[in-house]
Length: 87
Image 1 (cartoon, rainbow, N blue to C red):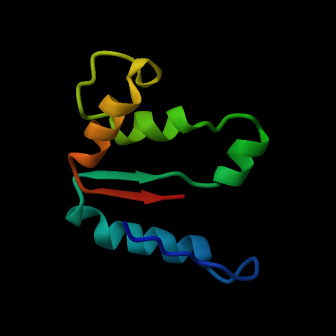
Image 2 (spheres, rainbow, N blue to C red):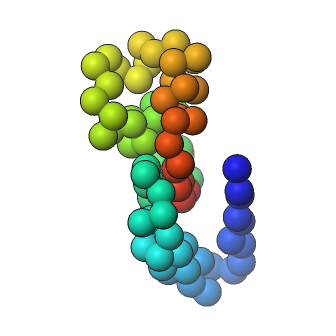
Image 3 (tube, rainbow, N blue to C red):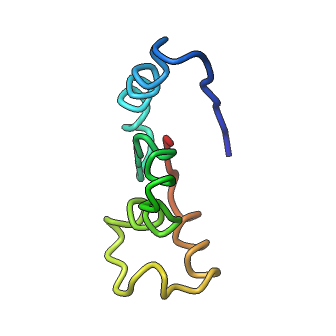
């Protein structure tokens, strides 16, 4: 796992930088998710872990809803392929 934090004052290009890095690196990963404005989604009660899981597993042909998967099954699916997540 590699975590990169981009911090700074509003308007200096943090989102632009992360979008550019996402576009540059996405071809190196089998799963890619870019969730824009997670803070607003969280405040508006539109964000939960199932949104992220559904996005990560959308091409997996998972027969059941992500919420119905056991933690072990979910972990196995997520660890089976290299993923890029940008929040």
